[in-house]
Length: 131
Image (tube, rainbow, N blue to C red; front, top):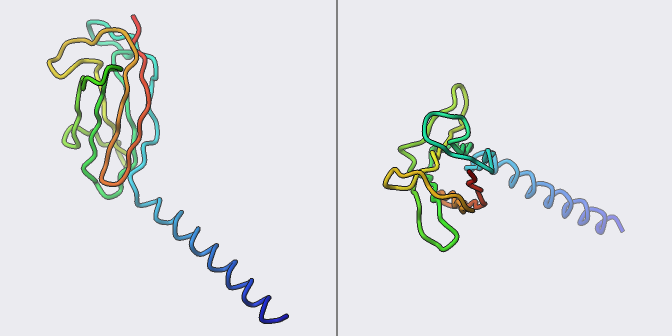
């Protein structure tokens, strides 16, 4: 009876240790924290709603990149780690997409897909461009 309790205790301890290690390792991985706004209305000139911000936590300064695709699979824009913006006093970074394609032209209204990639993480979602 005592051996069964000890085994059960060791099993519970091992499971909790594994989950603690998992949550501890998450602190050192790149994480996409916030994408905003999800609906943009780009226009010519400088306005707040011309940009989409991709905030992420990157304690190891991984080579992250952001790809924007149209619904038909055409790659509209690619943003690399060298274009990231640091947020003061933290390990948070930001990619900024100005709703323009790789040639610098303002994109057409529609639904666009984003793929945020790093060494071992991928995040995706949608952005709506309206006028």
